[in-house]
Length: 358
Image (tube, rainbow, N blue to C red; front, side):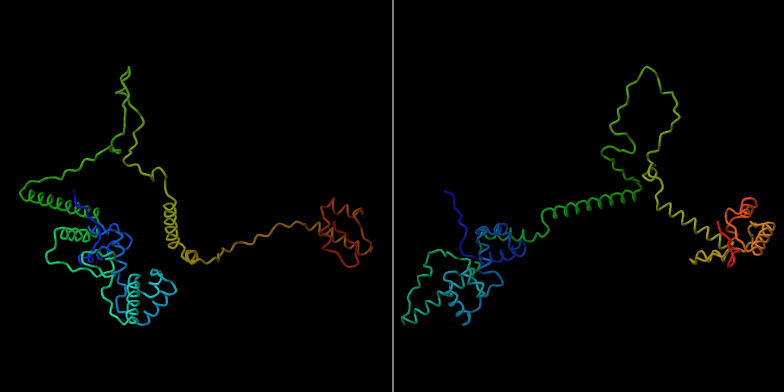
C-alpha cells in the first residue's frame, strides 16, 4: 500500500523562512505558487500561517489592562465574533480567543479558590494540534532528513532566480553568441598573422531578393518567330536608384528652402548695388520713397471761346434782370449748340438770379 502524504502539522523554522522569502518574491496573492515550495503545506495553510503568526504587523507583546477591558467588553457585545473583534483590539482572532479563555479560567479559579488540575484544552501525548499556524515554529534538527534538504535546495534555486526562465535563456544565448564571435575574431587574427588572408564570407540571404530578381516570374513560351535580334527603343528603368521622392516630386519644404535661398541671394545683390533700399527692405520699414517726376496737368475741358460766351450770357442776364429755363432759346443754344452743360452755370450763380442747373 503506498504511503499517503497528509499536508499539515507543526511548522518548522525552515518552512517559516522559506515562506517569508516566497512572500517577499511572489506577494500575498499567489499562495498556490508559494505552497509549491513547501511540500508538506497547502496554500490555505500558508496563508493562515502568514496572517496568524509571520506577518510583521502582528502584535506579540503582553496584553495590557486596557486591551483586556476592551476584549471583555467587545466579547459581551459580540459573542463568538472574534474576526470582528480582532481588528478593533489590534490582535489576531486566535490571540483574542486564547486570551479570553485564559481570563475566564483565571476568574473561575479565583471564585472557586481551587487550583485547576489538567486543562482539557491542552494536547495530550500523541494528539495532533488542530491549529498549528498560531503556534511558534519547531527548531530545526541538526541532521535534517533528505526530503527537507531537497525542499530547501529547490526553494533556494527558485527564489534566487529573479529574471525568469525566458530571461535566463536569452542571457545564456547572448553569452554563447558573444563567445562564438570572439573565437571567430581570434581565428581570423591568427590566420592573418600567419600570412593567410581570409576574407569574411557574406551571408547569403534566404528568400527572394526583390532588388535583383522578379518574384514568381514565368517566362512566356517561345513563339513561331525569333525575336531575340529585335531592338527596343524603350530603356529599362533603373529600379535600384528609384526612390519615393522621384515618384512624389519635390517636397514643399524643399521648395520653400530653395525660394528662401534665392531671396537671400537677391538681397545680397541689392545690397551691393542699392544699399539704402536694401536696408529699408531688410529692416521691415513700410515707407517707400518714390522718385520725383514731372508735373503733368490734364488738358483743359473748356476753351477760351466758351468762357467768352459764358461771360456774354452773364452780362445779358444781369442787364435784363430776367432768368431762363430749359425751354429758353439761350439755354438751347448754350447747351446743345455750344456743348455747355448745366453744371457750368451753377458755378456762376449769384444771389437773386434764376440760373437753373440740369
